[in-house]
Length: 153
Image 1 (cartoon, rainbow, N blue to C red):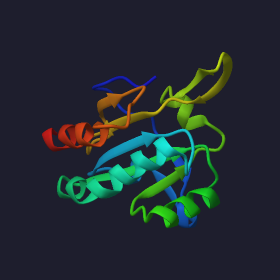
Image 2 (image 1 turned 120 degrees about the horizontal axis):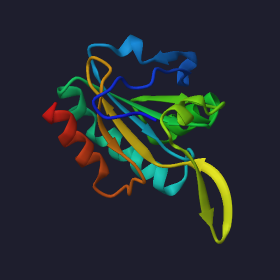
Image 3 (image 1 turned 60 degrees about the vertical axis):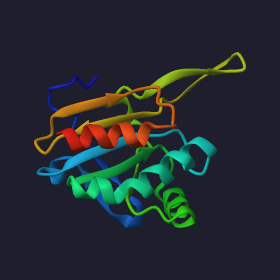
Image 4 (image 1 turned 90 degrees about the vertical axis):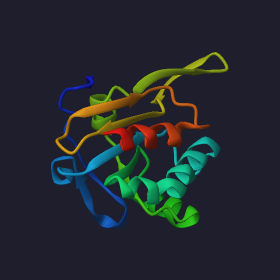
């Protein structure tokens, strides 16, 4: 589990556009790493569009945004195109990054238990240190909260 004030768990994941993203390659930039359950669902779309709309403000404080789910790269590409998302979507199909960040949890819906991604966001500073953590995120007001924390770093 990641701890505030300590090194964030390293990651390397495939991304939309056939690329790959690693935490080590983002040194010198702030990183907003947000985990969401599924592409093109109401809450996840609202969150992604919120980050899209606030991207110029994140860019002003040298912060990159990376969305992470277990969806395939192909599904990410369709989601990005449909909502004109200008930031990276990374695919964690094997769930290793979700597990490293503690976002793969048991959930319950209508009495049925299942495993899924806990909507969570992590703010990592320019040196790879975890500076902010939001779990069980409610979408309303979340992007603004993360932006304020990034601006304060």
